[in-house]
Length: 183
Image (cartoon, rainbow, N blue to C red):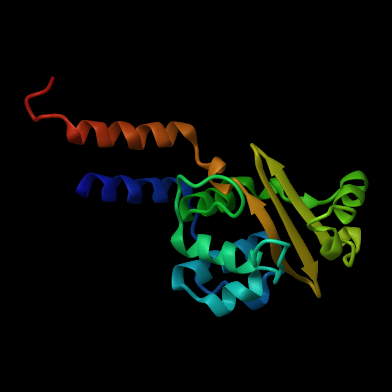
């Protein structure tokens, strides 16, 4: 267990630049400030701030805002699919992949605005207010209203985790489980 904690701290040191401590939900005016505020809210388990940062949306099946917030608070790095989240993946996004988030292009905006699930929300926003990420099977939709971002949806965020680091973490776990006389 000690090795896992040390490895986790080492990974955080490699993945994370120095973040401003005071990032807050009310100043989420850029993708970077948005994700820093999200990180802070998750760390503090501040559901009120998370509700401001995650768009209040319900599809035919579930309350997506509640589901995404629950996934953020649970933080399972092995989870895949809709709402998948871990703090490691969020840190990787902030440290290395913010440039992948950009305003949606004309064709994709038209497609999203007509989408059966998200169209009713997206069509109420101007194209310049809809930002997306589609990178390494990670997809997300951010909405910008009154200068601030809100997360509408993401999937597969944990796919941002570097497979080399995952293998190193698994290898370290395997080494710990072998008998001490193993060479």
